[in-house]
Image: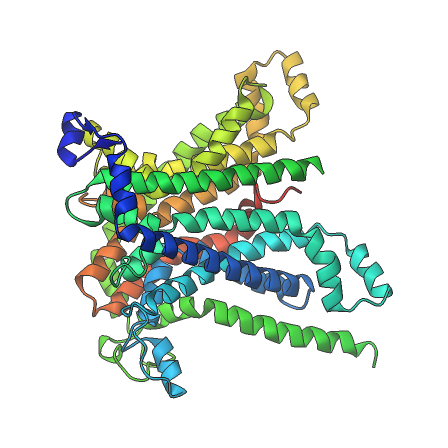
Length: 259
Length: 276
């Protein structure tokens, strides 16, 4: 809430400006865009990460030759430094030399400017982010599945329930606590994402991939002359959102311990 | 006939599993492929699916230019591991076994600390480091990076140490060992697996960190490898084989850890999310 600039930092005489900076941030034309982008980026990302992670966890849980090794390989995207994955995706999606356009071109799709067109940039960073998040979801949901006793599925199959029915009436409900925590953790992590978007698009073109975290980063460090006041205001909005979900997380954990 | 059916079923699943894995790992393969491609072939249309005519010029560039960065990253990673364990292990011990007052509140604070976006932390550190003259120093970066792993480490240690049988500690007390002695000769050796998991993640996170490096260390003489890649992208956008070669080299620790310590990786990912 202080009017911090670089000089004020050094001299320590920042002027107290009350909620002016917040008014400035909320009044900015970037704010609604960033808020919407954050919501779309976060929700679409975690939804697909979760769905893919769950499907794969069930698939790997069924057990087959090599399933252990393959499951371990799935950890790779999660272990790579984010900047490595992000720059690889940026190259794969590059307009002229990217492998993605080349494959699509083979099917007659005209060149798509994935990262440089405002229509597809957000989609591109979301796809990369989903890819990054699948391993985390897979590992947690898989260990959740391991805690579900196999006798339940056996009993259901004796009663004549097919695989699909078994999943929806036994596995999925029993997995609910683990699912809730996976989604919450995913939400908290995705809200904070900076590296991936920054390396792929730096929030552009225009503001089409600017999320709250990116906006904050750009204000604070994106230019040569750091301006921390609006950045901190945006950051605090992010903390507030994260806190709300943090409390939800605790609530869930308590309930899990209770049961 | 009946004996063969499950096997055939399994094979079908293995094939599908291999397909999914290949799809998932394609970006990693592509990174390796591009890193071996000649500069003249980078713009080939269609791109070469396999480096038939491989070159090591990308890797030569890495050795020539990025070696100091790799050293810095290694130093930051190891420093971060040491600092994290020195802080987190005693903290976990105190929270789990010494019946601290306000332990629950501290646990809550640690959970919240993990939720604070790194950007916000970076601004805080910047403000402090400007005054202390710690900007662009390796030490400053180690301290900043360890804030990612310390809360995780404390929570993991606390969870594990709460499970240590009390009889073990009481036996030590009867033999005349104080809290510190008990910690050193009983609790710490018993928690070896937790230490490995914490160390692994502390290293990996410090090694992969980009936000702190790009904010607190951007004008430093010693930049870590992540920043090296980032600057590379900014400088010469045509040398993608060199960029990807650097990326491959930067991924080596992850690959080693996956092979050597996969058990601990899985343990760390699920820690705190799933109660066994």
